[in-house]
Length: 91
Image (cartoon, rainbow, N blue to C red; front, side, top):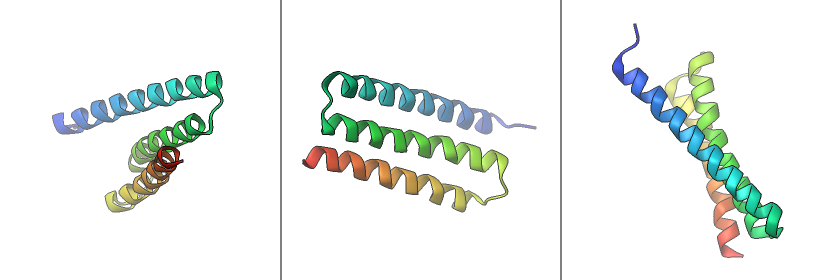
């Protein structure tokens, strides 16, 4: 039986994934329009962050990994995504 907390988590993760995809898509459209390295890096950064959300849900639901291992996988994607975003802001 699925608890209301499990359903709330799934709903929040789906919302987070949709917002991440929308942000990545808008960033990509801006990059295609202006063709700047800053927008390209922002698109890549948002893409990695969104990928982290996606892989965490997938790994937790469909693999035998522990919650800690799943969070580590998500955190690696977030580190790459935020690192690329930081690089786009500094140049």
